[in-house]
Amino acid sequence: MLDWIKTFIAVYETKNFSFAAEKLYISQPTVSLQIKKLEQNYGIQLFHRNGKQNVVPTKEADFLYPKLLTIIENLSNSFEQVMQKENFKEECIIVCSNTVANHILPKLMTDILKTFPNVNFTIKMMNSKMALEQIQNNHAHIAIIEKPIETPNLKKEVIYEDELVLAGNADSKYWLMREKESGTRFFNEIFMNENNIQLPIINIDSNELLEKLIEEGIGQSIISRLATNDKIKIQKKVNSRKIFLIPNPYNSSIEISKISELIKNLMKDF
Image (cartoon, rainbow, N blue to C red; front, side):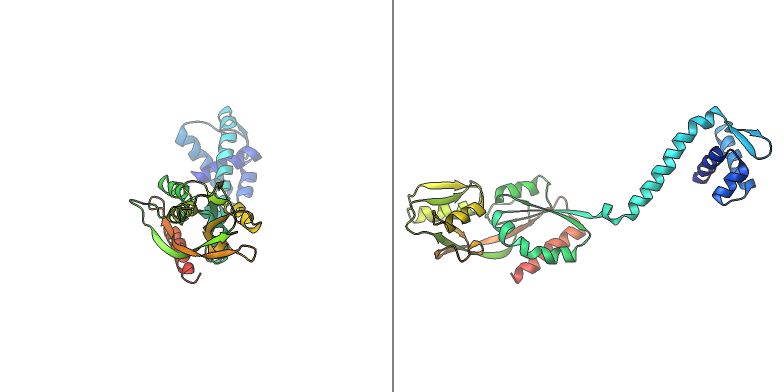
């Protein structure tokens, strides 16, 4: 049928069986036979014969030509798109908490991208609770969080032991705290309760801003040792926490599973 359509288009455009045959690199009798079969198959006349080779399209042919031309063009475009591997790259959405996004994942991405060049990655930073919700709502493939949240029906694997330190000016009258549902806030609240700390709290929704304030000598807080630098004064180690990887069991593939395994292996040497 596809050959018949191409032959019809060639005859319609050239108005001549011989010219159509030359255009299609087939014999003139083959052109005549295919047009005849097309007409017989649908019980319509497509061309009025004007001599042995020349033809005049009928109204039916005028109606069919633009529609069949579109079909052929769409078919050609479809095959061209198939040939472009970019259109068939797998998607991988990774959601992670602030500490992971700022201090862990960037150091892993070179190896991840090198190993999976045909995957389109999207990385989203949010607090641990929101990251877990992205997995539960099937909006992400992999979550990496630090808050020990209960995850029924989800596989949660420990991939790193993160050291927590008390950082900042010990004489500061302010305590810096992340927003509710943040993994860092969870450990700050425990520390403040255990040590009966009653300082005014400055709530901050960004680890980067919190760290900048500490660098400027404003406030103190429990933060990851990964977030410290020469400008951040460390008072003491206070605790440690686990970093968890949670794969999406509802939307996975062999490639996504391999990405999860690579992240776990890279974290062994982190």
